[in-house]
Image (cartoon, rainbow over all chains, first blue to last red):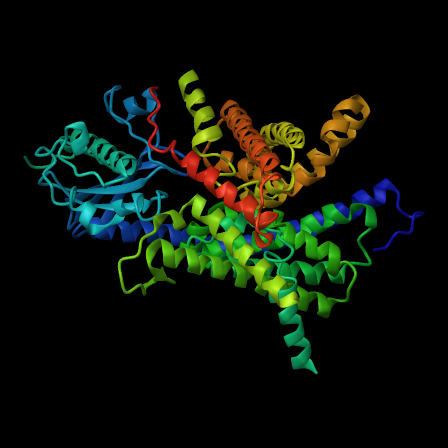
Length: 214
Length: 200
Length: 194
């Protein structure tokens, strides 16, 4: 390393570091520019894939943000085929909602909120106009590998998919409901169930506004 | 000559001076990203990329960086490459991006990278620095994959996602935090033992 | 609000312990835990730096987002943390030589410590506000201190045990940590009454 002591005024040092930072900033701005479209595309594709998994048929979608957030927005996506509503998808998570947020979603202030073991579980719950859950897509699950991660299996999701929303008590059996819980993963099961329950409540509140049959 | 040099260097990075098993640096990513072998490989490759590029640049600029501010300068270089790798993974390997999470930006504080910059790249020409970066990165990756494979096999009965245990094999503890510590400890003990008996 | 903050405290300090659950800060944990007194020192130093770093990076993040350069987060954060630690070291030397004697040597170790940067990044990821970030970082550092002091206590006792040659040093430390992590896992499933 160069260590001439004469030319090493503090100003010189600061200038060198600034030059470094500037060069770094430029390089990063360049790479960011090159990748940002692709990154945005990845997010869009992920959403499309999740929707396709749970809504049977659609050719147009309208998304409405229910709860804005930089990382975890709640959204209501109306899917249409040939003009009429073919399904509604609600994107939400198990994160704790404040009383104001609950109110915004037209949910009662005493809505049960079970949190996940790790980061919030993010789901997309699909509903069809006949008031059935058409499917549940797990967007993010950071639960215990091998235990809580079992909520993202077709077997567990069958607890929800295809069910009439009025026909079931959306609680785990331990809490008096109709949904199975995964052995040794009660927390994850509860979090997912109460999140689906929230989605059901949001859908029910909106169903009349959307003019859905029945 | 070239091949011998490469072989010698690889042996150094993977065996004699393995950053994890011999120098014992960079514990955090080793524990966190080795839940399965695939994540381990992903992390390893990211570190190889960052280590090689930062070694190269630091070596190139070693006569320009004043001694007094060398650590901040190194950090700027390393952080730049970490961000580049982060953006590239987010764009082209989203599942890996989600699996590694914050451990990608945390590569910037991985003591191995700063350590090699200080100990080697700052004092050596570019080509040897690049080789050093590669072999140290490969050593790191090898260690990670070893632990990752062990934890994945014991914890889920799979290897790189393919079920290979002939019986149902789910010692879940291995996939969890305690398993990480214990596996690494036992592997290190094993290596120490081998080293001792080899040395005798 | 209070119960929300209290929940953050208990979860970050104990349930999701920074070392035993999240694998952040393992190097200083293993390196500076041979005696309870040094463990305390490290814990205090980490607490100091972590809270300050979280406070400052909170505002740095606001600036980054406003300027639309979110991708500079890693670079900005690590530079801020490095500068912060330098400044803290210099100020400590001048203002409180006694404190510097106790904590000073640990400070450089903390710069390249994944815990400080990790927690700063996580606080942003979890969308915490300013007060929540401070509480979160303080609680996390408290968890670090709890873990490292307990660990140092165990290590002091281990000096009197006959440890196989191959296990001495880092291996036995890691296995002990693993068992501690196992113990802390017992907190899983705790449903906070608020």
